[in-house]
Image (cartoon, rainbow, N blue to C red; front, side):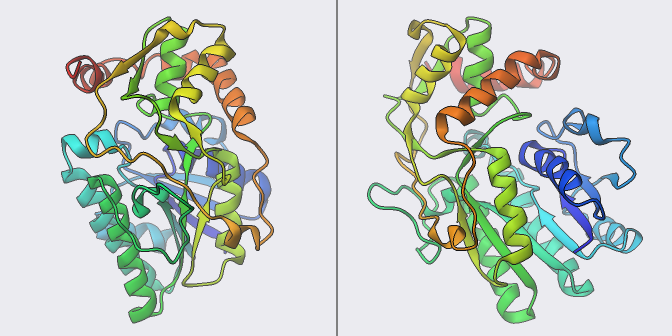
Length: 335
């Protein structure tokens, strides 16, 4: 593993992973391949754009010819796939892009991995397990996705498994809990709440806010992906999370406390269709590789809030145009 194609590397988790890998491995060469949809942003990589071990290719993972050309031109030996449509709310409104990118795009990358004998790692999600009202999901549990987004990611995981078995592709999968941290597009709950609170705007909280999520700091997730990519057993799945859940309403309250804002800014809105009440991951398999998260929930959220406070240049220009149209449909018109 030395020449790595990082698909979706201009997105939230992908860009943090690029920065992490360039800092950790002085001999690695990284090629970011990204379509630059609304959530892909070269500002996320501004601080590494002049690094001689970094290259950027604008492209769609559904474009097989460009994927193959990129692999051959840059002598790629490993694909780490972050590329995906990821927002549950958008998948409920329009699932088409999710099926195309998350399923067909994964197929294209797997075909490239098969053809060129590449190491392949898929960045997945805990949402493929569906709602977990008791206990914690293990990697061997059935996949019971309850949203079009989760179904598209579960489909990708099953497709990868088929390529591992049928074509002997050297692949692994991580299924991560909710990530928070720098450079997260302000449509997800935490950056919406933080940026709204900074401006004294309401925090739109779904239903009673008693949905439970495992919020992990993005760099902890990056370390886990790195570990599994290097030391994980081929053909295996690894859950990634802190192993501790938090009510969404408690997350909103802590955001307001960290910013010195009143809880009266919390505004309950009608719940998301099919909203999963709880996700919970058993992460013992990953811990057996020697991984532990470096941040607990409060520290992760504190660092996240601090970053958004100090980087208004990054998010203010994003909360306009298409974003405002989406926000109006998602939160204002549903009340």
